[in-house]
Each structure stands twice: as C-alpha cells, then as structure tokens.
Image (cartoon, rainbow, N blue to C red; front, side):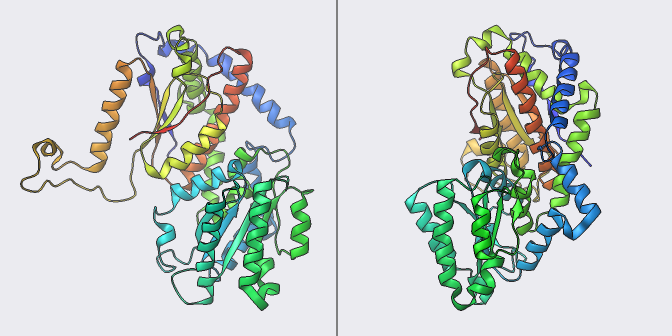
Length: 428
C-alpha cells in the first residue's frame, strides 16, 4: 500500500542556508529523540495515541465482537436501517478529528442525499462545542425535520456524545436539550429506542456514565483516561462516528499502524516523520527567518476542500510552530474523472490558454505559481503528498502529524527561542 511522501525541495533556498546535508546532519539527534519518545510511550498506561491503533486491531483479532472495535461495528450495523441522522456532541478538540474524517471521506453533499444514495448510512451533524444559541436551535430543528422520506427510519436519529471527563458545560447543555427533544419525538417508544440511540464515549469515572445508567444505554464506550481530546481521532471517539458512516475503520487503524512501522524502521532519508521534523527544525535556525518570526508562522496549506477539516485539526494540535514554512497538502489521484475545460466560441481571450486542460492540471499549475511567488518573497515550502484520500491514507496522515508534533514539542523544550503560534489557511 502506498505511503505518504514528503518533498522539501521548496525549502532548499540559497538564502536560507538549508541544504540536504544540513537536514541529514540531524539524523543522529532525531534518532535519539525517537528512542526517547518511544520510551516515554512505553512508560504510559495503555491507550497512548501511538500504541492505540495496534491495540485496537489486536483486541479485535483476539476477541472479535467482545472488543471495542467489534462492539462499535455491532452498534453501527444494527442502526443503519433504523435511523436517518446522527448528531455527534463534544468539545471542539474532540470533534475536530471526526469532523475531518467526515469531510475527507464522505461526498461533499452527503447530508443532502437521499437514504438510498447514502446506502442507508446516516446524515451526520456536529454540535455541543459552544453556547451558540442560533446554531443550537438550527441543529435541533434540522434533526426534528427528519429525512427525505416517510418511513419511521427517516424520522429517527441518534446521539453520540464524546465527553472525556463528562464536565464540558457546552456539551452537557446540548445533550440535555437534545435528550428532551428525542424523548418527546420517540413518545411511547422512548423506553425501547432511547437506550439504543444515545451512545456515550467517556472515561470510566465520568459523570456521563451515571446519566448513561439512568437512560439504560445499551453501549457506553471508553475514552482512554490519559488520551488528549485532540489525539482521540483513532480511539473509540473517532472510530464510532466513522463506523456509523460506513467507513472502513480497519484500514483507518491499519494506516496508522503502517505509519508507526515506517517511523520506527525507515532510514532517515526516507522517513517522512523524521524528514518533516528535521526540515522544520533546520528552517527554525535560519537567522533571516527567525527575524521575521512574528509574520511568518508555519502553516498547513490545503488544495482540496475535502481536507479543510484536516487543516482545522492540525491548527489545534500544532498550537506552537517550530519553523516558518508552508506545508502544502497535495493529492496525487482524484476520486472523479478529470474534467476537461472546453472554451465556447466567443469566450474571452484570457481563458483560451485553459482550453483542453484538466482541472488537476490547472490545480498543479496554480500550486506551482503560488509556490514560486512565495519563494521569491523568501517563504519556504514543502509538500506532503497523499497518494489519494481514503481511510488508510488518513490514518497515516493523522498518525504522522501527531508523532511529528510530539517530536517538535520535545525539540522546543531544548530550544525555547521558537515561540510563534501556528496558523492555517486554504491554499486556493
């Protein structure tokens, strides 16, 4: 299976003094740092973001339906034919991963499609991350409105609530409001359906567990105690929404495991994680860039709308930048046939050079032109190249960026002179 590639030729600008030799010179330092980070993971209780994907897969192989993954599959498969929508509640950190997966893997107009067009997979909405009165009211109205048909399933919806400690005020308020609406809508069938339609993901000692017992929830999934919300995309908190959408959770986890193995075994000059960190750290030491730190924070630049959720997630997880470089997120293969531009007679002359070219060709040209403009302004760039968008590739990408930010955080402790905040923007 294809792995993500990292191309940093756009960072090798003569004015920066960054060379392949300089990047390679960090190999021993980063190898030692890798060992240090792995040792820290080994000392942690089960459930670190690094080890969790392998643990999930191993548990499923050993116990199947008794494992967390098996239970997630059972819940999702048992509900697909009985509901039309799912609302995922949580704080912004815990929702950022599931939102990114939904946006990357589903049709851009998934929620507007009929049940048949969606293969009976539910529409999905996100909330509980603010006290925004209008968005909360609009979400409630949309859920009550139901689907586009007249069957009982078209009028039924479920709640996945992700609350690590069970103490996020915004999430608690949203849950109580939607529970009241759902109970009223279910009517006499609430006793039967409510325990199936409310699915918490929370810590073992969370107050949300008590609410789940009061409701009689059929399933409550564990949120690992020592796992940060932003690192939870490959945990039950991210896998449950993905499974409800019918996405391939096995390949999602396998992609993360493949990135772990690559990180552990690939030589330095082929290791995308170590290369990413080495280039970023090398650029951070360039005096001319350090002088412009206030106006040159690092960015992740996406060129495909499906990846906008990734930019939002990365913007939170990489809260402190370690260099002043634009990392372009580039896709090689598109899902749809390439659209060719055909200019009609009488079209303005400025559009004539586009005639006969495909949309991916135009995107590639636009990317190259903008990068050349950035280089002329002294702004380095790199490319994180995705072979395509699917759950396996996304598993790789999430894991790569989580590992990289962990390594960069350790480096920042060694060099406290690199404090600029990370920022994100759309490429086109």
